[in-house]
Amino acid sequence: MLRSRRVGPATYRRLIAEHGSADGALAALPAIAAAAGVADYEICPAGVVIAEMKAGHAAGARLLMQGDPDWPPAIDDLSDAPPLLWALGRVDLLHRPMIAMVGARNASSLGTRMAKALASDLTAAGYVVVSGLARGIDAAAHHAALAGGTVAVQAGGVDVIYPVENTDLAHLIAAQGLRLSEMPMGLQPQARHFPARNRIIAGLSRAVIVVEAAAKSGSLITARDALDQHRDVLAVPGHPFDARAAGCNMLIRDGAQLVRSAADVIEALGARPAAPLPLTIPDQPPAPRRTLQEAAALHNQILDRLGASPVAEDQLIRDLGSPSPLVAPVLIDLELDGRIARSAGGLLSRVS
Image (tube, rainbow, N blue to C red; front, side):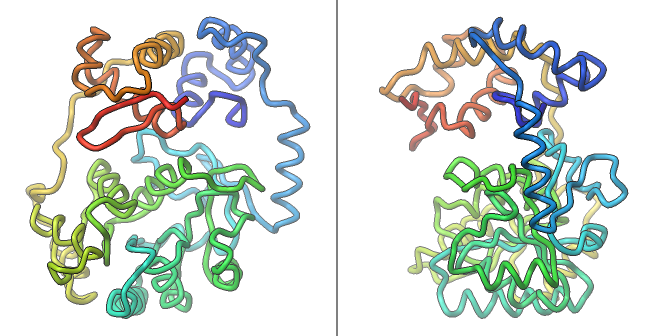
């Protein structure tokens, strides 16, 4: 069901809840798709799933499902938590406290040194370092954390190494640490897969440390995901004239914990205040529930109203006449699916 077209984690859960079982949900999918205007809908063929299972076995990977004894419970805090994860390596690391470390791909020498020092000292203190196997800060953190424990969350299939320059590192992580992915085996990562990967990095971790990040970067998306999940966000300060430090300095300005060493991180996590930190997003009332038919109809309404000319999000919501808590998750779904694009100022446009 999860590999069927237009079925993501949130839809998967809603289908199971509405139909009581996977069999019932699969049987209902074609009718639901037809109601959404999708003709000749077919569920994922069994042969595709069998091929994926065989590919996972050949790669030495293990499929973890919710309810599995080795499933990481922290990730269930995500509103769109993945129902399954391919794991390659030491799944026992998922039961140790984890801290994410992210940053610039074009990291400076100082940033790389800082990432290595933090990762080495944090693993010595018993933490597992989580990152995204990217070049720069991610790679430095993984390398330094290998001996103590590291988890690499991948944007493509767990058997697809990206970037290629990190091939040796990826093999070391599979042997000494753990590689994870919610994506099908063999899937080549695309731009829209990285924000989805970032939410898992944040969801696994007690806190996210941003070592170097530009004012507009994927690392800040991970930090935002962490805030949405009520995780702590910490940042390493940098020189005001260095663009690679702009994002970190902004986070600190807005209340993130300043990090000079691993001792600062350990102190921040060990002395968690009773009241929320300034950066923590307060609890929001639960969003109204939508049936799949309603969600599909809203998808179509949004796409019908958007074109190549950008439109302000609040104007779109007013035009739709729907409550913002209903529209916002659908906009995120469409953005992650590559159907709409968000430009400066929060303007939205349809991707042709």
